[in-house]
Image 1: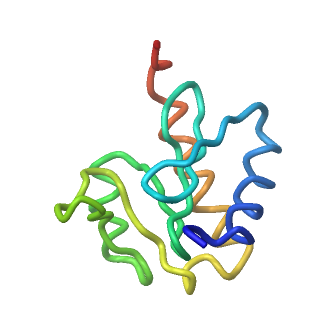
Image 2: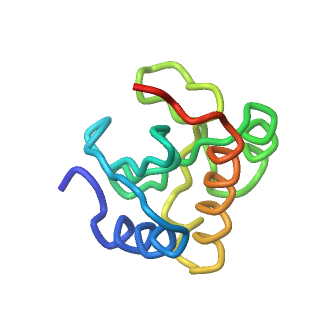
Amino acid sequence: MAYDEVLAARVRDILEELGPLEDRRMFGGLTFMRQGRMCCGVLRSDLVVKLSRERADQALGEPHVRPMDFTGRPMPGMLYVSPDGTRDEQALRRWVLEAVSFTDSLPPKHR
């Protein structure tokens, strides 16, 4: 299993409350898109969130958070949140909604 399907379903449930969404297999996991942009996702057992660079830097001081370094180098604004940081529904919702808020603040991506 390339990603935790239970975590992906929990994330999808939160996102579906907010309207249409698209999901794609990406990075060997599952990525959720809003307005053509990556918002968050699941890779193995970790939640992946996209935040502003400033907020991501702040979040690195929080428990269970580390930089997304899928390519061997940290990706600016991208974070992993370990399973301990998403077990609680309230914590998961906070991370997902924060990623949605950031993504929705960006102009739509044109294809």
